[in-house]
Length: 328
Image 1 (cartoon, helix red, strand yellow):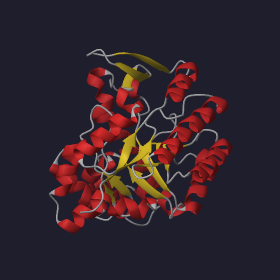
Image 2 (cartoon, rainbow, N blue to C red; image 1 turned 135 degrees about the horizontal axis):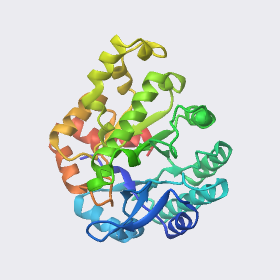
Image 3 (cartoon, rainbow, N blue to C red; image 1 turned 90 degrees about the vertical axis):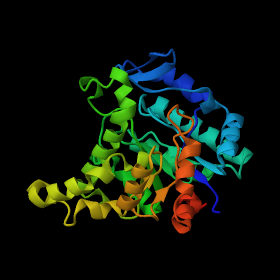
């Protein structure tokens, strides 16, 4: 059976958290929520819970061993490094990337990693990209909205052009959507259940209609959480492309065709959602991912659902696709 590679797996480091607490500014806070856990808030909306497992590699390996997972591709979850000035954001990117590079050197058979970049400062981002690739990064992590800005903002074009030139995988992880405080997402932490997939769906839909994937045909985009709600909405996007002229200004093909050029992970919770993700993106474009060690991770059950699939599809999702896309 194919090696199991978790492509959606997070870690933090003490230096990143210290920098965040010192430099994240008035938009962010860390405070307790119902149940007593301390959670990072953006605009008053709770969205990311630092857990002990995010700092403990031995606990990670124990959980991987119990679930039958061989390798993890590490990334920095939200709010990533999009919260400080140029120096603070660049330093935060360096310390988390260095921590991942150290982990790979210590555990070369268990760990790969993707870099975080100070995207709001493109010259700094390009410099850190080169440094991270030299250190062994196999891709880049970018949040679905970059401190409130969209991927299609011209500010980021130099970074996308370089990532396209390198044909590097780019993992899109959602964060709290723009305007989350106006949508009542603090209630019941709706940011986690609804806000995150909404953020990814909005980002990719805008990118498709904007012609992003035609401008950067070599960039390998991986969308977290099974592509958000894109599998469910693909037909609606196509219908809007047919009947709304604005949707045809920049693209000449239906949006669902672009989904076949996008990758997704399996951080999902039902067989039906997994089935729909595979149908939308294709069996060679979906990879095992868990969101570990976030509290909503289901590392074992997710892999068990994949293991129920026909053998070729099962092995593609377990690790063959990830090896191809990340060059492992």
